[in-house]
Image (tube, rainbow over all chains, first blue to last red; front, side, top):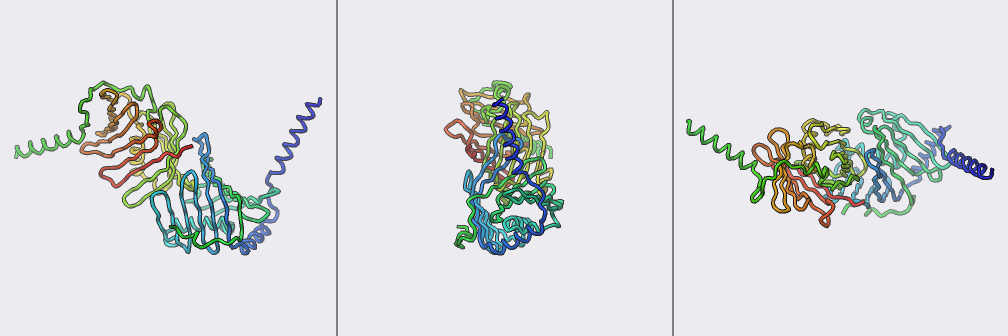
Length: 211
Length: 214
């Protein structure tokens, strides 16, 4: 009898834990957007480590890469993969620089359509300004006890061919992006998890110069 | 006039013959090869776990880097996905070991989704990974522990693989008149395949892959 009670107790506790993490529709998305906008104005810099997880249906394991990320207002971004490969993307004053194992290449993100979109997407996700783009995305808002979860379904035909859905998770404590998940049409996905986040700490401008 | 025609034909034949000839000095023809029958994935030594390669593709003056994930199946078929370092999928295709089944493109981003480009990619990956060949058209030549396996591809193309101690060391794909591409294989401590390098001879195109250890 005691065993049955223990098992039932365990199941209940498990269910209640699960329910706590369940996302429900956010009642007031305008309020959230206003809070996010206010936060964006206050944040001058973000520094964070990240883990990128790539799930491919054909793979038994997930492909994990780790790196570091810096953002400094207005539009300075350093996105760097450190392991298991080295790869660096730097955006500074509308110039996009990519450095891999073999070479460093610079693009004018304003004159190149693709990089202009990429630039807008990266900085939009970081600052939350992407949520204003209702022309290209159908946006729905959810929340649980610790996170705001924004689900974005592409409307744009070009993007629809690549992605099924974009999920952005904002930490309720500081309204910074906690997770970013990009789901492809066949169920494969890329999940980026941000941790050790620091906001408004001084970041040297040299960080955004590719040597 | 007749003499000129004969001479030009002779030149053409010798050109074709010399371009397609394989350096087989000292090798004995050992008949139809069953190398893939016994060891369907010679390159991966029948290890079916997926492998991730840091990849660098150059075409004319353009270059593209990313990660190529190769999943070998026990049947010898391969599933290959190419993604950017940031996780964006560029293409995904399945290449069967034997040409009786068609290669399949599961996904390809719009700018690359053109027949000519896809056929070049499929051909290069087939040569690189020794797949998409007909079992019946595999001829083997041997000299002590060294082997040369000739795979007759579609049309006039054929791929020639040099094998030493059961490891493929290099390959050449030859067309009717000249070499199409040359491949070099590099192994880590003579065991696991570490890197591959394919260079086209007439096209300014190359593919380099370096294994990312687990």
